[in-house]
Image (tube, rainbow, N blue to C red; front, side, top):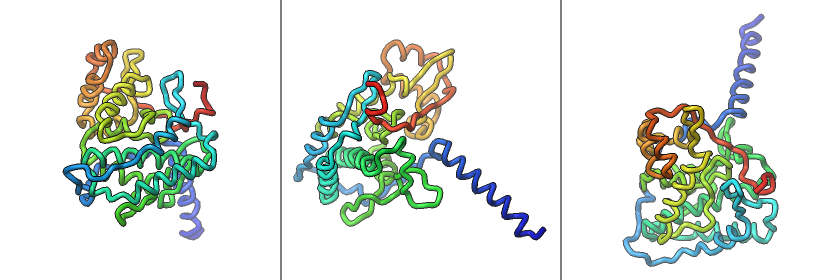
Amino acid sequence: MSLHEALVPSMTKIILTLLLLGATSNLPAAPAADLWPVWQAHARRPTIQVDHNPWQRFLSRHLVRGGDSINRIDYGGVPAREKVELQEYLDDLQRLPVSRLTRAQQRAYWINLYNAGTVKLILDHYPVKSILDIDISPGWLSNGPWDLKLYTIEGRKVSLNDIEHRILRPIWQDPRNHYALNCASLGCPNLQPEPFTAKNSERLLEAAARAYVNHPRGVTIQGGKLKVSSIYEWFKSDFGGTDQGVIHHLRRYADAPLKQQLSRFQEIDDDQYDWSLNDSSTSSP
């Protein structure tokens, strides 16, 4: 047997193994916060008004509040006309001179662009069972849509990962950003029923953090074991960098009974995340 004949089966097995792992595992290690300096430019005073009303209209029509306290989208019920309107909203956001917005306006802008853009992605590929099935990122073993440069803003190509990891996380350095971004999955913090704005962001961030921490997909204590959302594992550096840091953050937002229970823990036992699509048609509200 030649060396080539010996190596081909082995290489094939390795490739198949990698593909299988990619299909069945969660995301790889989350990207680090890596500042894209150009997006630090901002105005001191508001001189431009950003119209998020189209996003509000979409949410009012198609966001469904479930009896399990998870917000879902009626993807199958969105007519073609409203898909066009949502794309027009995304186009309008891309035409804005972001560097001329205030810091508060920018934060709301990036969050809404991420969330509305994610919903539009799902609509463009619907029906799908999970956002992980939308393998449009560059790279042979890509998993999901996050690295594809979907938007052009001030002449620069921007991806969803850019928005989260190169803009929001490093500029604001606020762990509550994780409660604002929705990746169209049941394990994710809720998509809020209203757009973020310069005026309401603080209120929405606080409410979103409290809602997620006190929901079973955020924190579960059972049999003396502490299980948390995988968000706290993937982005542990944003929540203090240690299990103790994460628990301290959780206690800040936990309601009284959970807060008392968390005081008994120094370590996290396990983490979980459900990548199933937040589709109202496949669940019982």
